[in-house]
Image (cartoon, rainbow, N blue to C red; front, side):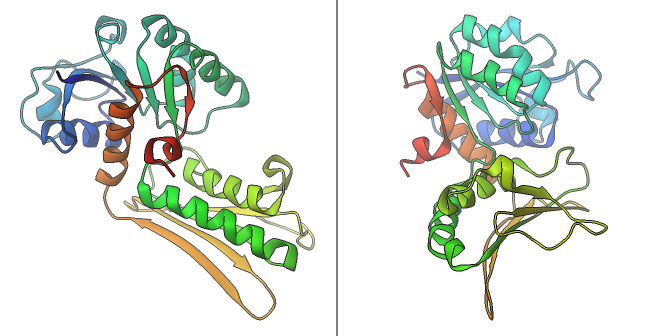
Length: 270
């Protein structure tokens, strides 16, 4: 039996990639059951498969999540922070597994997601690629070994010119991994860019720097700078298929889980 998938944010870059990957059968056993986005996006009312550049899906791009979600097995959400949080209560009521790739959620919005996770399985990650999740492990180990020896930690991320939030969710994942390894509180240590005369860098800082330009899919580097040497741990995405495949595999995994809040490390067994 196929796992019925609803894509929320279906008209966006990631939404179209997810639909195309489903239609091309890149993850076995998934079937597109709904494609949802805002009323003013191009393609409303059109076949979602064709709109994504793949074969026809027999599912039109629409705006009514409630019409399709209650019969779905999993909702994969790449929308906006307020849209994701706003649907949390309804997802919990529907009893549908939920995969969240949306970034930029506030503490209050995260609380809504955590509340839903008491009733349904939720996989939430700022980046769903295998490489990035492995990199987080490496960054944590490097920070554990080097920060106490005086190495400074900086995170540099580059994305396309349409990305709305900064730092990226992936950069924050890497920053959290570094903070965990270094024994720091990321909320207290995070410094977003520097301008003017901020003064000398403190030992507790983790700096974040965001570049926006062109069609960069995603490029992240964690820099550990000591006296006389510098270590860079990097990941460069060359296709959105990497993230889509991760999200779809997360969806197939989530439908088999008990309620709870999971990460991609859980999905990948890392």
